[in-house]
Image (cartoon, rainbow, N blue to C red; front, top):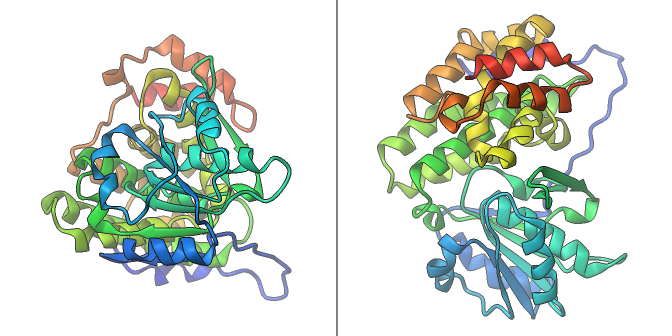
Length: 352
């Protein structure tokens, strides 16, 4: 894929007034062995009583973390609110929160920290991600309600204080989960690039994220135990999310969330299933932006993304998850508004 310098034509017009709000965690550490920064970070944040939020699959690896947690909260996929409620009780009195895992653990830890604060400042949160979903970079959090549907909340206090990208801690992450969340990062980059308005800083970062993900994800698949390649994956995922609200609220994300929790489909997999079809639909609605993306990527963006997903041996068809057309029509109706029910239904059915 050509270097993103091909996207020069996206620069704002001279004299046009625009603004950009940079929202990211204050401190980001990366590289192999960077988990050693956890203790200094907790000391800097005066978090002498820290609770740990993680997933059951990572419990055997918790001993590798330089932390003596006052409590350990275990969260399942899609962050069920019942488990978050229990976690708030378990973490009472905590002066810091450490999340260790993917988006579900990180989002649950965000909500727990804000709930512990009441109306005040939450205990600082240090995130140690083990996937590429970059939940750690967003001032929002998703959870599953009692009906089994995905819901979310936004609050500036949900933003984590520090992130530690240590690829050595990701080597136990199953390859399909790692690669599918890498496609989720690609989804962030594409949807941020296609977001309305002028965002030249994000455009440069998003195109660089796309370039890096196309380059490094196949190499991660070919070398599952290469932590240096996984560090490259992590940096690319970080770069994908400099316009978080627009990226996380794009059409592929919205449609994916509508069916993900309800049908037990992980977030990264919903991006694999839907992103190429959403891109084909948006090509007609956003021809100029898609044209710049095509120039930067060196071909049809939707086809290139679909080919990448296939080359990574990731799921490509909703039908494999026993989702049927009536359920997709219901999901389309629920997330329609800016886009018609008919258009959204067509995208879903294209993904069958």
